[in-house]
Length: 547
Image 1 (cartoon, helix red, strand yellow):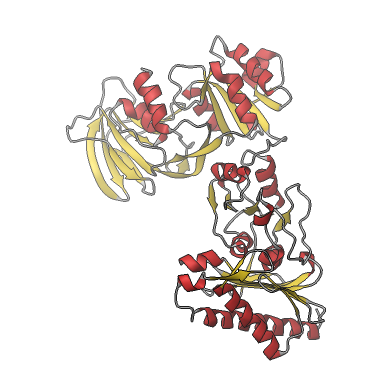
Image 2: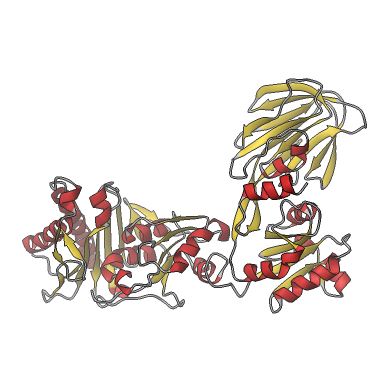
């Protein structure tokens, strides 16, 4: 960029800032929300013009006339005004009019300057008229929030997506399906801010998908935020995956998906979060080979998956005469287990994939379906009609070494039959209790319905971020389970003789007396594929009616 162009761009950005300031001052004179929302007439875009919209637009036009700025104008209320200029100011004088009327502090002035289409926009400015936050961008120079450069995310976690989604009365039904499947969703009623949140990395994407064309996006809504997002490294796509663009025409409306990166488009439109099944899903299968029905059940799963790519754990693979791998080496998105809760826990020790449990054991509290529903369950899995529930894991550290994370619990107990041990237990450095007992269980909410339950633990809803400390056969009447914030660190000191540390019932470590073991929340999560059944229905079915 030469010196002259740089000066012109700086002057243009200063001008846009001055326009925003004038708009902010002008609308502050409107006495209340009712006056702001008073409808005056039908605007050129086919929607009612309110008093706040008209005052804001008139403020912009007055400024341009006063300063003799050579720009055409395309605006929500007045339409296109040709002043014989090369460039056009694409203006939404108030984006989020309803928010301004009802008192939601999210509404902006949105201004983009360019020609031809969105790809021709070279200067953008958005200001939240309540908070004063200012987004701006110049083509080829990056995007900024309050003067600080912003960047869209380079990587998004499939199961932790935060999506901005249009949820108005014209929204396509698939938008509501998406909202149910992603980690978090929001609808702010202000497209310029929603797209700008993608540009800052606060959100992973913004979906505009209306089945009513009159409710779809207009170029004035996103002329500025389009450039800001692109300059921040984000992308905007048509819903068929092609590159998105719109001519500077107030009569045109469109749907689109704005994302931090192409992977998010694929996750939303072709993954388990969207309404279209992702063709490249890689399924794995892990089977408890001690079950008499292991092979037959595995064949049923394979038949239900038919043309899908399925990787087998080596145990079942050998039985079926196929190639298999250790679970740790299975590069899969979804791991299907056949067995009980122990099978699920063993699978999760070696894999970070989302687990879909088929119960071929007894209670199978963690499993999602019984063997009798395999065909139905696999069909729902393939169609993406499920949610992924994240469960907290427990981290265990002994002598500075981190052990395997626990989905259910870690247990410290005596290493000899009919012997008790003395324990001191500290929470965040404070002595919480001292007792003599067969052992101590530190359980996650998931584990509260397992071993901990059998020795007196309360059942904890998995949405509660807590650990529960449960004494085992304590020689002290006052020794009762303690529910502890998940953010706390628990230290269990073995005062006298040796103990065993058992993690999820799957691995054991000898722990000598006179040492300490630390427990805290893990940074990792267990991920379970779930259908519609809620936690309490499961408790009733499995623990009350099923025993």
